[in-house]
Image (cartoon, rainbow, N blue to C red; front, side):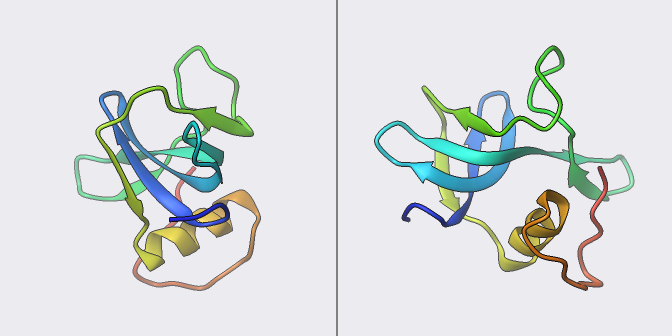
Length: 96
């Protein structure tokens, strides 16, 4: 895992996807919280906290359960949702 990688961070508060900007203290750029509907669809929240700003630029984790590389399909959906690139992927629908 290195700066610039798209990773998934699992914390007690939820699961987040973003681009690593620091590993000294884990910081991700353009964090998106993963949401899942009752019918099994997955998407990204517009924020990371109910009272937080919409679409924050960074998120620092003081504690977390684990961090791992993000599945390619989800990483591509994150890139599309955050304006990094636009991809066509029928397996993952971006919902925001």
